[in-house]
Length: 490
View 1 (tube, rainbow, N blue to C red):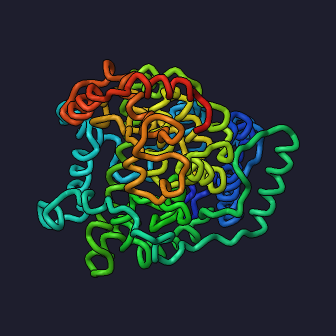
View 2: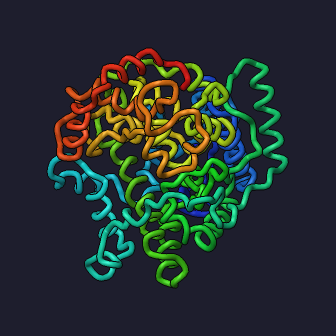
């Protein structure tokens, strides 16, 4: 049986053909020299890799080296590897001798199936259409030929603001991992690397995300039983004192390969059919996995290699140092300060703070999309090239002018005020555009539209907004104010 080389994001049993198959695991120190990773992300990757090596025992050959190539020189036998998750890694393994590259695993829809679907799509590729195809293709939440409940998406029922007067959702907290000797070894090694000059950002642990399949499956079971029912209605909500809300906190487990997404999808489907979770919550969770996660994976490979450099809105401002270094204490705007602190302290915030607080602010200021891709890749425990390229370039920054989304995800302070408890007590007023209390999101929104209106393609979703822009009597003042604000923290 050929030895299977597992990258550090291919650590689950579904990446092996036989539970006795010999395994190769490589830990490359150069990976952590090339990027300034979040300290907790580096810890999680190394902990997961070393835990897998310990679980496999003599079945695995675990090689620690400066580079992958140096490690492979020590392995004098043919190996096979599942399709890597980045273009750079894929090109690397294809250049190697004695390495067979297998089709990808860890996703729901195959590359050939996606290509066939994309070939029949008319116009731009849209997640909603792919999601419908994938539900039918894999028989997920189906009632005969149609969707359970009669509708493909229940997203409109999953946009509730947080309950008024509530600092935390009334839902059991997710189970947190217990660190062990391997974690202690990793922490000591990272300390030593820092003394050697390898730099990280963010604060150190404790480790909050699963590093083993056992930890990941325990968190999945807990989520399906205790947290899934409230996940749906509040999946877009934000609370300053409740960073987890009812989210699964499993994105890093899927992206490390500890969990197969279909086991989570089938578990959620059973919860609905057994009457233990409402359909809107289940459908919302399924959409994240069968729909969105697979969609951005496939677009990463479907789009041209240079897609990550798309910048069709002409965003030229470098990502400022305070943002890159997670200096939340420099920020006065409550929402941005809290969300940036969440990244600093946890290496994670859920999808709405990423899109509507971090990404929205960057979009309004015209920060370079490619630098933002890199920042999200480095600073999030679930961040990888395939995840962040399309999510940031196409969705968050609209730098492809609509190849995968229908409009820019820009908004003023009113959205954040409605979906969070951030605006109460903030020095800025979401209803004001100018002056000392002028909200940087509200002002930034109109300044962004004024700067990019000639680049944004005309469509029905933007027509009404652009008419409002023309009616603003203080637009010149707003634009001047935001230009003066520049790259300083708000």
